[in-house]
Structure formats: C-alpha cells, structure tokens
Length: 152
Length: 268
Image 1 (cartoon, chains in turn orange, yellow):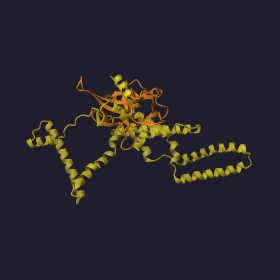
Image 2 (spheres, chains in turn brown, orange):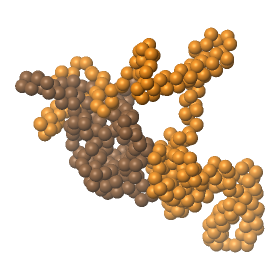
Image 3 (cartoon, chains in turn yellow, purple):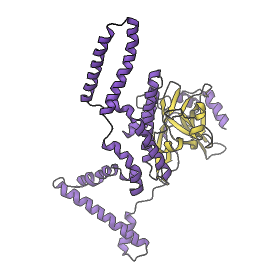
C-alpha cells in the first residue's frame, strides 16, 4: 500500500479537442500543508448518467481524504489499484439551483459514511464551493468556462 | 476583476442570505445584476460562439442594463454627495419646524414616513443627475456585431500582446550585450521571426515533395520539436514514506482502520 499526496487530472481545455489543462488535486490527510492547515481538496466525481443529480448532471462533489495505491503482489503480481478515499456531499433539493443566484447548494450527509473509496478514474476535475454554513456550501458554477457550461 | 468575478456571486449570495423585509427587493435586484453580468462575461469568452449563445449573451446584457441602476448610488461623486447631504439637511430642518406642534406618538409615525420620503427624494436626485454613460459600459452593446464581423471576442484579448512582451523584449534583452540593447533586441526578434518563417516554408516544400538539399533536410529534422505525449492519464504523485499497511494509512489520514477495511471490502 502506498499513500500519495497529489493527483494530476488532465481536463480537456474548453472548446479544444487535444489541449489539456492539468488540475492538481492535493490531499495531505491529517498532515499540515506548508505549515498551514491540512489540505483536502474538493473534486468532481462522475457518479451516474447525465440525467441524475439535477443541475450537476451526474457528478457529485466530494472532499479528498486519501489518495493511495494498492498492489496485489501474490496471486496477481501486476495488478495495481489506484484509489481515492473521498467524503461525498449530498445534494439539497435534488440538485436544483437556488432561486436567485442560481447556484446549487450541497451539504454533508447526516448519515454520512466517513469514507467512500472510488477509483481515481472517476475523478473528473477540481471543484470549487463557497461555504454557507459549517455543513452547507454553494457549488460555484462560474469558476471556469467548463463548469459554467456543464452545470448552468 | 476576472478572478474576483469567479467568486463574487457565491460570496454575495452567502453574505445576503439573511435579509429583513426592506432589504429583499434591492438585494435581489443587486444579485440579478451581478448574475447577469457574470453570465455575460462567461458567454463572451466562448471561442466558438453560436447564434444561440450570442442570443443568450444579449439577453444577459439587457438584464444587466435593466438592473444596474441599483448600484448607481455608489457611483456618485463628492459634489453629488454634498448635494444629497444638503437636501437631507433642508428636509430635516423643515420637518423639525412642522413637528413642534405634534404629540409624541404622532411624531414617531411621522418620523418613519419621513425616512421613506427622504430616501425616495435622495434616489430621485441621484437618478436625475448621475448615470452609467461611459465607454466601457456602452461597449457591451457592440459585442454581438463584433462577433459577426470579426469573430470571437477572446481572439482580440490584449493578454496575447502582454505575453509577446516576454518573447520579444525580455528574451532579446537577455541575449544582448546590454550596451546597445535596443538595436540588438529589435534585430534579434526580427531574425528569429524570419528564421521561423523560413523553416515553415521549407517544411511546407518538403511535405509537397520538393527536392531540397540534404543538409537542409537534416537541419529540418533537428529543428522539429519532439512530439509531446498526450496528457490523458491521471497521475499520482508525492509518495509518503513509512506507510506500509492499513494501520499506517488510517493513522496518516485520521480514519479508523475498520472503516478503511469495510470500504475496501465493499469495493472488492
């Protein structure tokens, strides 16, 4: 088992077919990041088809808790699983944007599993959210053109 | 402004979420204005605009113009502010004279009414003498025609010119002997540009099957940049030491061992 601190996610640049932007998602776990608080970035995870999760169209926001590799060494020598431990945010009002600012609110689940393990292939990019209360955030859909087009 | 715009809407929405009855209308109007301005800005950055996106863009611009007057009172000059203060003082003096002959209960009611009236008069004065007529605000209305005539808006961004400054001036300065720098910078960029053009021409001729001298073909092979591998894989970096098993993992991430094992089995 290997624990890692950074995931580079290639995201196709807006209106481009072969140019990629690299999103660097960091996850330091409980350890401090540059002598400040620990850093567990928020990412988008593809969690279904485009017709689920309302305006988010099949994607969910989650906080990275761990990035790790598991190497299965005995029976299947070459198999390496590259995984991420995440904490999912649940949608408020089925992912419908709020009335005026048209931003989708998300919150921590009440019956939240502490950790969900997903393949890093399902992570599609960095996400941005603005804290509303301690357990509730607004998904920032105008952070870049890609998100604006996907979520609006 | 661009970076501010990315967070502005969310921050405003959070800041204005608990309002009293008198604040609801103006703040909603303010939010609508900011939202439409941001939407317009985002749409204007599209590099392949379609008639549909251009129509959206125009709708946002119209909505922005309809609601922008909510911010007018923050644009007034010092002279205008003095005028507003003067008006307010005059109104208060006049009311004080009226109120002398009224009982205290009635006086309180009149004071509330006067407050509303004072605000109305203030806004009326501001709207009559101040406006948003300046060039940048007017330019928005020409974006549609500009796109139809010349192409997308980002193509005319001044950022490219600023980036060219590094290549044209700074690199030239570094290459110069710092004595007769201006002349050397100019000739350095001119030479580079000419060589670049020459190489492109030769490459085109080579592709077209022209008979080029051997040394030229060799040189073209050297100057051609190595193709970069496409970036499509997710890469994990920053391996942490001393993590060998689930116990170390749980300790490093502050997650219980049972949870990790349960989730791994579920993933299984």
